[in-house]
Image 1 (cartoon, helix red, strand yellow):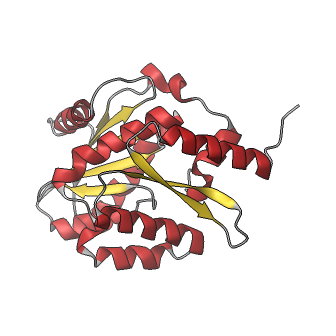
Image 2 (image 1 turned 90 degrees about the vertical axis):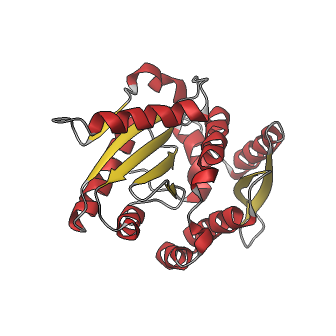
Image 3 (image 1 turned 180 degrees about the vertical axis):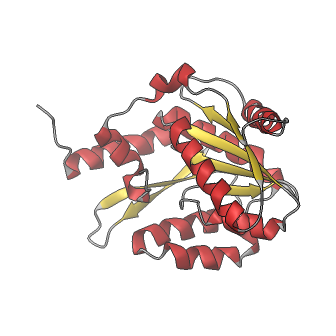
Length: 241
């Protein structure tokens, strides 16, 4: 018989998650509804800068209010909306910690565009992002795209969507994808190097425009029940279809 999760179960779950978060260098903020019922936890790096927190909270608020597009437009005009290249490794380390905590994988895409205007490439990418995804412009031609809670299959589909969006804007792209699973123990630098190696492979003559590290090796390390997945990411209202 399948057990149905109750509000009491959810409360216990988030209480336990808050305790577990104390083991990591993060701060937690409770997210509650108007009736004071607990919707979830907002976890932030202890060393996170104000602009990072503000951008994340804006995306979270937009997901609750159903005004994601308006929030994205506001963030696009804000210089803090896109983290700097210097912050990339720190962000990846935070996502690796999240994988260890939630057992959900994280995908990293490194995208290289042709000589198109970088701002147009960035806008085309943003059209395809979910509100929990993170975009970092590494230089004039390369972007890093972090997809929390996304496995290889969905990351590949997202990469194809991004490729098509850029093609519509007249830009040709090449991408390399790397995945971090719960039983992986390599570093943020290693994950970044894997994605960059796949990008280099995609740029070889005759290669596919999207290359990736095989995800078969550890896919079973991130098995969670439907109820657990809903509890972990339900408060972010992420579209995982």
